Length: 201
Image (tube, rainbow, N blue to C red; front, side):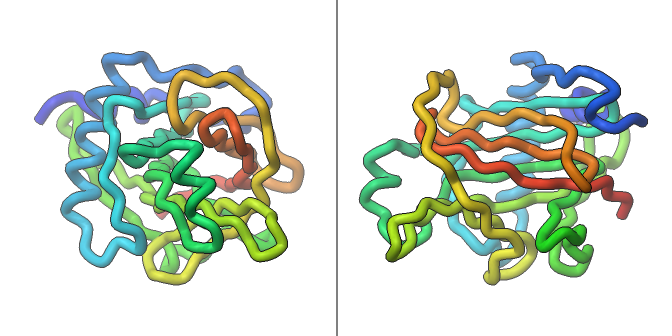
């Protein structure tokens, strides 16, 4: 088994106590490939997404980690055409973190918990499916799915005008009332913040 997840295992302090780090390209490529393989093994994923492993993005803060793998063909045009239908964005994998909704950590039974082999170890991660939609009122939303077809978190997505190398990018930072936030940037056009807490399955 290739050493795919050492990057996450190396990634205990809160986010404020240490700087976030980009996962190195070679490690990220190996991890994203393995994660995509495990995603393909999953049954009844709430969104059907063909993944663009080559454009994954990842961050770590001490023992916490997150990797975003975008959908293939993701573009500003696809977002604009989606309307109120959910446009698949990609997968968010998290190590030792769980999403927060309504100021509460999402219950484990609503989360898709996946065991991934790597570095001769078993790693337990969360797999979240990400989607984008525009409401009838014209508001942009990031819709996040866990285990089932119903969203576990819906986030307001604010407009931005940023430059980014990957279709999906992220930052990790200290939260207010939570362990931290994962900022998700979509095509340099929209930004949403997902609050997270520590997760120990």
